[in-house]
Length: 63
Image (cartoon, rainbow, N blue to C red; front, top):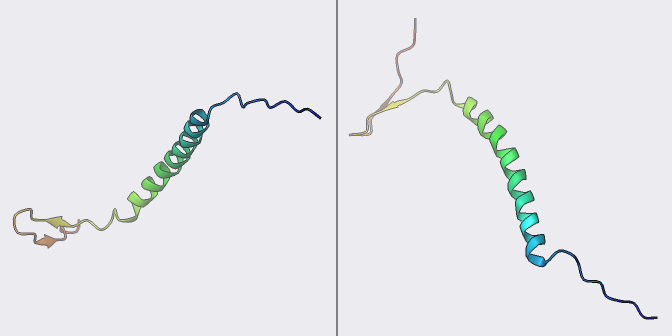
C-alpha cells in the first residue's frame, strides 16, 4: 500500500490571492448598486449650510 503524495499544483499564496480577488469582486459588485439606491433615499431632503457659522436652512420650495 504505497500511496504517493502529489503536491497541489497551486501554492498557498496563489490560493489566498484567488480568494482575496473573489471577495473583492463580490464586494464591488454589491457596493455599486447599493450605493446608487442609498443615494436616492435622501435626494428630496436638501439642506443648505453655512460653512462659517454652521447655520442650516432648507431652500425655498419651487412654485
